[in-house]
Image (cartoon, rainbow, N blue to C red):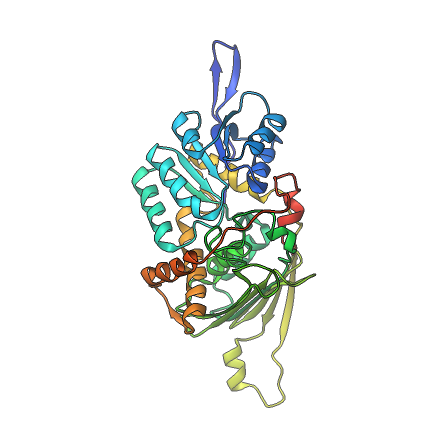
Amino acid sequence: MPALRRSVRSWDKQQGVLTVKKVKLGVIGLGNMGSAHCKNIEGGHCPDVELVAVADVKPERLAWAEAELPEGIARFDSADALIESGVAEAILIAVPHYQHPPIAIKAFEHGLHVLTEKPAGVYTKQVREMNEAADKSGCKFAIMWNWRAHPLFVKLKELLADGKYGEIRRVNWLITLWYRSQAYYDSGDWRASWVGEGGGVLMNQCPHQLDLWQWLCGMPKTVSAKLLYGKWHDIEVEDDATIVVEYENGATGVFVSSTGDAHGTNRLEILLDGAKIVAEKETLTVTEFASSIDEFTYNAPASGELEKTEIVYQFEDEDFLHAKVLNAFARSILYGEPMYADGREGLREITLANAAYLSDWLGKPIELPLDEDQYFSELQKRIQTSKMRTATTRDDGHVDHRSRWRVKW
């Protein structure tokens, strides 16, 4: 994780001042997340970043930038115009999902570093092309997996990587804190359609958790899923999902999510040979066993009970995880320091999501590696009959993203 703190300083002879080197960043997309990133930078939460340009296809969002952001920040009406301007040395992509790879590829071709919002894309074939472009360019490539920066998950990753508790036996993640009203879906024409968003709760709300799932536990060998489309809302994509996976060592995992559960739950439970770990509400509870489960199972008396010791780690909620990822990206460009997540790692989360969709569409378990051509073909069938929504409520980036997008632990 980023730790070293230094800055590149130089003397500006013309101005007669000591200057600090910062990454000149352009933000593409000024919706909720794009505008929030701009506010984080201008609010001083990303000291190694200088916001030099923004772009959006909507005139009202450029008007917002003119009114809310400092003078001198260039404004463009397209991603291409910003990329080709030469104003920025790096870009942050915060636009609808399908556009992430083509914009990133264009930027790499112009020698720009890229940080993309989640998900990496909609389907794996598209994401692979983006990754190949990143490899060819030699530029820095990051993805906004900001929950990897949360101290709770940093600690959980350490506990699992240590190996002290043995292999994983079972993983259960119930993440239903994504409740959304119909007005939310009606707020954007691209939302909740195959042609506009490429999916529902798995593609929009759950990428962070799907990424954390594989980051912590590894990729499974098979994926089975049951998805419900428009069960709780007037939409064409899924708003309820249950995924069951199996790992190479025989362990199993269950992932349940929905945007229809008011006052939902967020609980991650990982059972290992030597411990049970539970993450919920900023608390990480580790129940250590006196022996492995297998050893106790075959050697304990009929009335025996496995002894345990409980360790509780308490964490504070954090408001600026996005800023931490963005600044780490900048410091990687400036000083070669590690990022929180290389952009190429976005492929694994998309693989999980694509496999879940394909399993439900075909009605059978999907073995990994995924048949990417088959998934792409099945997705196209749904796109052909998909319709963009008619936005009827306002979604112009003026909401407080910290209250809207935060997943409370």
